Image (cartoon, rainbow, N blue to C red; front, side, top):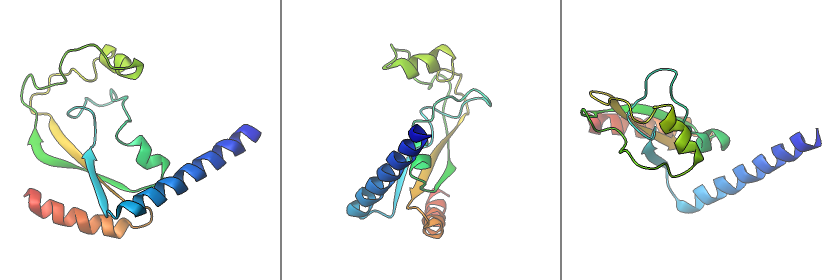
Amino acid sequence: VNELWESQVNRSVFRQNFSQHWNEQEVDAVLSPAYVAPASPHNTSRYMGYTALWNLVEFPAITFPTGLSAKAGEGVEHREPWNEWERILLEKNTLTIDCADVPLSLQLIGYSYEDSDLFSIMSVLNTLLK
C-alpha cells in the first residue's frame, strides 16, 4: 500500500510540475504525431510514446486524419533499433508494414479541463485541412 501511495504522490507532483511548465510556455495546444509510423494494422500497435504522456498528465487529445497517406515503400526505414522498445516493435513488424495508402494522423493536445478550447482549435484546423 505504501508503494501505491508513493506512486500516486509522485504522479501528482509530476502532473503539477508539467502543468506549471505548460502554463509558462503560453501555448494553447500542441500538435504532434499520433504514432511513430503510418497507421498500423488493428491489434498490432504496441508503441505509446506519442500518447502516454498526455494520458499521464490528463491532458485531452484529439487524434485526426490529415487527409494524407503514405505511399508504397514509405514505411520506417530499415536500420538498427535505437533502444529495446523499438527492437520489440521492429521484431513484431509493427513499424515496417506495407504503408501503401495507409492514413497519416496527427493529434492535437490541449490543457487539462479545457476540452472546449481544444475543440475550437480543432475546428480551425479542420477548416485549414480541407
